[in-house]
Length: 354
Image (cartoon, rainbow, N blue to C red; front, side, top):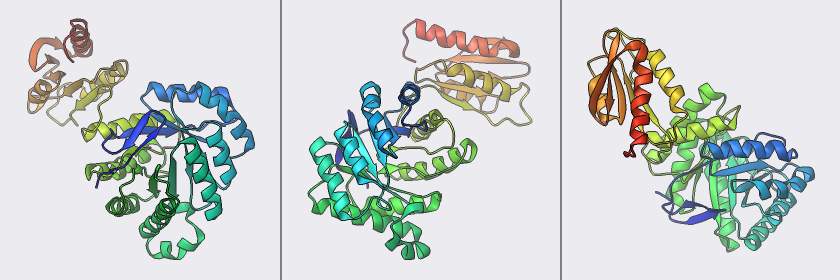
């Protein structure tokens, strides 16, 4: 079910066996070039690979060349309602455009965008959302919203094929996790083009992370999906962090440290929750792809700590520090975090593979 066709968004390969890429979208005013570039730099620092920028009007379009010129990431123009803005964005050097079949206009308008993309050698995303389906699909959506997402997407896929244009990817998103899963499984069975995954309007960090992890994770686990965007209300950096956690949990990408910590129980004789929070905070400073375990008791602690690159296995008011599967020192609870990071830094300083 994995896509067979590969496209490129700037220098990022999407589909056709390429690693699942991570993208986000700026939430600044696109007419504020400085603020938008500042946010793009933050996203790039956390591993974002493709960034989408809203182009709602001519003012935003006029600022797009300056953003593209200084952006550390390929910039995709997000366009609704006005096909001419998509054409203008491609002419300005956008690495791609996203159009919404629910509001971009009729076939003539779509053909204008396709021809502009062909000339620019840039891809298009057919971005279908359950909240903005074409009017003719609404009766179907009342009975089968996932089916309406699929039907709309396939209509545009066939239109692009009729126009001899294959440089595109698709997305079928809903705020419903179940609808998102059902629609994308059905699409993947029908097409070989790259699929962009996301649960749209997933919500704030607490609820949105859960919905995104379930929806995106379930599809990736089935081999569906070539690029992902986690949609959260708030700082888009949280979208990128969450995306990498989803990919890491499935063994698809590994960026930065991976923390394993026990849920704690009545056997714990050290404040494991506080220890884990301290370790998590300190790990933000480390870019290495290491696995660190913080475990609370003798049941699973030594085993998990041995399997990780580094670990803490706690006992009564103290704990063992593990490095590369071996216990290296015993420390009181007050020293466990510091001792752990001394071993991590020692490993990094010695040039050992961590």
